[in-house]
Amino acid sequence: MRARSKVALLALALAAACAPAQADPARPRTVHLRIHHSSFDPATIAAEPGETLRFVIVNTDPIDHEFIVGDEALQDRHERGTEAYHAPRPGEVTILAGQTVTTSYTFAGEDLLFGCHVPGHWAYGMRGVVLVG
Image (cartoon, rainbow, N blue to C red; front, side, top):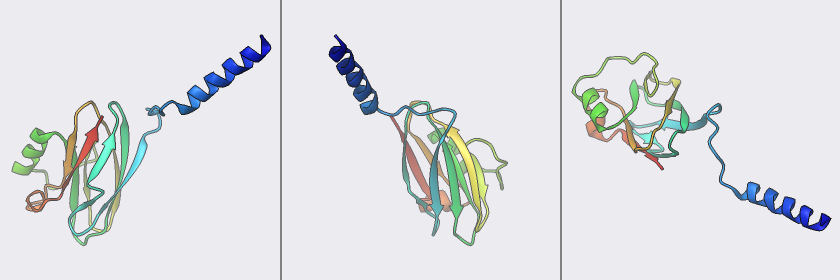
């Protein structure tokens, strides 16, 4: 009986160790983004539904940029007319030339876009995608 209990406990411990890690909402995962030559690196990011990502964005360019996370409709609204500078709010920040900023965003179940809407930057291709799932 004792040997069976030990085997059962060992099996439970192994199963727990092999289980996929769950996102801890109290500790967002940090994603480092670099802006260089008016492009984001990386341009594709993966997130789990319900996961909060903390973005640390470094602008190495000599010009200002934006980082705006949202669906296509939100990106379209910003492309038609955006604020000159974004007050810090989840998923929308301005990154001045040579600066580093942070923002956080909690993802639901759909893929989202991120990009810069300084005039001409979105059309130039300054955008990326967060794949959720």
